[in-house]
Image (tube, rainbow, N blue to C red):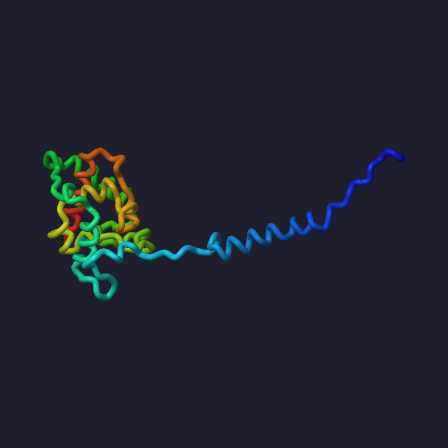
Amino acid sequence: MANERIPARPSRWLLALYVLVPLWALAYLFVAGGLVQPEVRPVARNVEGVSVGAAAAPDGSEQVLAILAVVPAAARDARPPRPVADAMLSQAKAQYDTLCAVCHGPEGRGDGPAGAALNPKPLNFHFRAFQERMPVGATHWVIKNGLGNTPRRSGMPAFGQLPDDQIWALVEYVRRLGRQP
């Protein structure tokens, strides 16, 4: 029993280190902003010439202008390679009901249940500005590429996994949907 070693007690410095390092780390995270919510500025609201809120135009022109500000000019002029067949339109309706209605609403008025939480709000396809000023090529580009990675920073996801003919059918469907009373 004489050869047994008695475990050494940790030094006071080591105990202090075990206590102080976690406290320092927590303080650093809060002070340096690691656990503090970052400031979120609505980038989409800073598009030159576009106002928001009470100053926004009731016909949707402000929202359409903000979208057009991020769509490449070449994409705006795109046209479908061929007319959309009726069979494709019925498929587009099913895709709209699955992919789009949750935000844009079943009638395309931008009032879907998920759209209520979005800022900016989903586009209302019944807006006069959408029908008159939004080129079909721009609508195609928005569906294909989304607006999440643009300065607009909306909740519109990209549906680039869809074939182009299906995207063109969706474009035609939302245009027709917006023309309904």
